[in-house]
Structure formats: C-alpha cells, structure tokens
Amino acid sequence: MAVLNFKTLNSQYINGEWREGSSSLTIENKNPYNGEVIASYKAASLEDLDAAYKSSEVVQKQWAKTNPIIQRNVFDQAYNIIEENHEAIVDVIIDEIGGTRLKAEFEIGLVQNMLKEAASLPMRMNGSILPSPIDGKENRVYRVPVGVVGVISPFNFPFFLSMKSVAPALATGNGVVLKPHEHTPITGGTMIAKIFESAGLPKGLLNVITTEISEIGDSFVEHPIPRAISFTGSTRTGKHIGEVAGRNLKEVHLELGGNSALVVLKDADIDLAVSAAVFSRFTHQGQICMSANRLIIHEAIYDEFVEKYVSKVSTLTCGNPKDSSTIIGPLINERQVQTTVALIEKGIEEGANPIIKGNVIGNIVEPVVFTEVTPDMTIANEEFFAPVISIMKASSDEEAISIANQTPYGLSGAIHTRNVERGAELAKLMDTGMIHINDGTINDEPNVAFGGVKNSGVGRLNGEWSLDAFTTTKWISIQHEKRSYPYS
Ligand code: NAD
Image: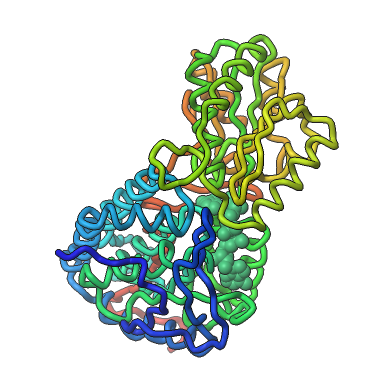
C-alpha cells in the first residue's frame, strides 16, 4: 500500500470527513526543536464537538452488532498499516513531539502491542449465566459496550497514550471521540484516525477534534453522549476532569502524574541499578509519567552508586532528535522549559547540590543531577517532567521505603536487590500501583494492569482491565415458569 503522508493531517476528522474546524481560532503546530511550523489549523468549535459525538453515537449502534471477526480484522489491519508506514511515523514523532528515534521506535512498539491486544477483545466479550433464588428464572449477564467514550490524551507519548484507550474502546464495540493535546494533534489524533480509516473502520465511529480548552470549556466531558471518559494527563487537570465527570455521572478513568522512586539496597547489582536508573530518568528527556524522579540509595553503597551514575549521565548526548545518536532532545515547549528552570533554581535555593548542571539551549535542557536532596525539599515532592534527578540517601531498607512513600503520588517504582523475595516484600509496602524488582520504573505491557494510586489516578487499563473499563453489564432475566405474585 502507498505510504501515508501524516504531516498533512492538519484538520478535524468528523463523521468520516477531513475538514477545517469551524472556530475562528487558529492553532500552530510547532516542531519543539527548531520552532518550525509543521501545520496551522482551524480549531474545533462547540458545534464540531457536538457533531463528533453525534456521529460516534449513530455509527456505534451498528458497530456493536458487527461480527467480532470483522471487528478484529480492523485492528490487525491497523497493525499492518503501522508496519508499512514505520519510517513516516518515526519522522512525525521526531518532528511533532521532539522525540528521539529511540523514543519513536519504543512508542511504535507499544502501539503495535496494544493493537494486538485490542484485536483479541472482540472475541472476549464474555457474559455469564447465574443461578436464581426464584423458581424457573434464568439470569443472564451480558457484557455490553458503554456506548461512546471520550478520550483525552497528553503530549508526551500521544500516539501510544491515545491508542491505549482508543483501540480497546473501539474493540469492545464503542464509538470514540478523541481529543489530543493541542501541541500533538497529529501523533495523538489525526494519525490514528488515518490509520483506522485506512484499516476499514466504519466512517464516523472514531472522531478526532483538536482545539483549545478556551474554545470548548468543559463540554468535552459534560456533553450528554459520552458515557465514559478516559483521561491521561496531569493530576491537576485530572482532578478537574474527575469533578466534572462526577457531577455529570460519567464513568471516569484517570491516568495521572507521578513522582516515582527507584530504590537501591546495599546488596544490589550496582551497575545494573545505574543503567536502570539512567534509562528511567532520561528516556524522552524525562517526560514520562513513570520516570524515576527520585533515586533512594542505601548509604553503604551511596558513594559508589553516585560516582557510576554521574559518569554515565555525563556521556548522554543532547541535541537534534533527528540525529540517531541523540539521547536527549527538546522538551515539548518553552513553558515546560521555564517550569523546569524554576524548579532547578528552587532546588539550589533549598540546599540541594547540583553535582551535574547542564545548560539550557532553546528547548533543550541538559541533564541536572542533584545530590544531598532531603524529603522535605520541593524538588523531592514535585513531578519533574524533565531530565533532572534527585538522589537521596537512606540508612536502612525501611527508611528507603518510608522516604519513597513520602509523596502524594503513587504510580510506579523500582527496587534493586539480589534478594528478590525481600524485594517483593518491600514492594508490598510501597504505595504505588506498579513496582518492579531489578528493573527500571518505565514498564507498560498490553495485558497487565496499568495505573496508579493516590494522586496518580483512578482505575486500571490494559488487557482484561480495559475490557472492564470500556464495557458495562446488562442483566436480562427470563422467567421460564409462571411466577405467582403475593397480591395479584
Ligand atoms: P495536561 O493535564 O496539561 O493535559 C492533558 C490533556 O488534557 C490535554 O489534551 C489537554 O488539552 C486536556 N485538557 C485540559 N483541560 C481540559 C478540559 N477542561 N476538558 C478536556 N480536556 C482538557 O497534561 P500534559 O501536560 O499533556 O501531560 C503531562 C502530564 O501527564 C504529566 O503529569 C504526566 O505524568 C501525566 N501522564 C500520565 C500518564 C499515566 O499513564 N499515568 C501518562 C502520560 C502522562
């Protein structure tokens, strides 16, 4: 098949048509590395949003009745289209998000795994037959799609994080309206629409609208058609989305921010721990919800760990994400750079030691490594969405876990030890939704429950958890024997 040109997808995708948004607002989609405008597009208005939801609602009714093998084929086909357009997708991830080639390959792999999992879901729409205390009654519990799902995605891994909800929601018989982040409308939105359009998804089932929140307010969530909202983004926005969804009695799934800790005990394989810790912080320049924000190191091995860690970080290459040797590319925009710089300054002001302090060049923030960080410091408590790390010292395993838990977040984590059972016991004491022994903090597998506790979110996605997230049940009972009623 012909290679698709994703960079021209600067429009809305509503009711199976590619068209301009009807808002007067124009949004510029800029390359975060060199500031070049990739595309300018007219934002979606409230009328566009309404048309998108109505389209999904109408087409969903037919889609829910479609043979599951035909449904499955769409996801298999989408997988193949990604395979055939691999290089074009790598290019757009580099240009729109500032992701390195390594990040692009990683993200595409995650998407393809997710599509394989989604392809299995149409044949897993199982229900149950339950006994009844009433003579002659048969209870059937059917699994049914919720109807229409509204999906909101962030800027950091938009191709994957949109697909992570869009694919299972569609595969379980729903219609979807997707709203990508305004800075990643192609990778998080229209590229996905184009792939599914080419894969034979019925027109109008999936709609993509790109707009500013100033244009649509809370209508994406408040609109009466979506029965469920799947949101991935910051805790601040997630709390707001949760409130609006609650007021409108919508089911809501929230995948939010993190402040994950990687703990290194005194019996750890230090070289492995160093590699895992570097990967967990500097991949995609630290803009990953599961990134290790804090390293908590047992005092017995602290000096050796820090020396090796600093030496490895010093070798990381920063610059143009198009260059295949680059590990650290640009942050998504100037605002994120300013937030990062302010937080670095706060760390220095509060007494942390910047043992490595790189420069800021355009949107590139070179690595910053802080030692002598204490749990009360701002940098230990805020989520750094940047290549900046806080290293802390613990005098015992128990103290390490206690420090790790001193955060309102609870997404991911890691523990390094040669005693894996001890590691697993300590992992049970960590207040996180996910934790990995002798690995990094960044892991996402299509069949395993993904999600956080505390300020990191509500609900779980992937595998059977996505099946539950995007379906509901319907109890249909059949009274086979004539029933007698007490007063009629
Ligand atoms: P953000 O909260 O600023 O934006 C996320 C999305 O919400 C965007 O599409 C934005 O336009 C939209 N939004 C904002 N207000 C809205 C409203 N009223 N109605 C509808 N949509 C609205 O987040 P971000 O800066 O794009 O992403 C970074 C954050 O996301 C980090 O905190 C990161 O940890 C988190 N994140 C979490 C996960 C996870 O799986 N837990 C994954 C990736 C990113």
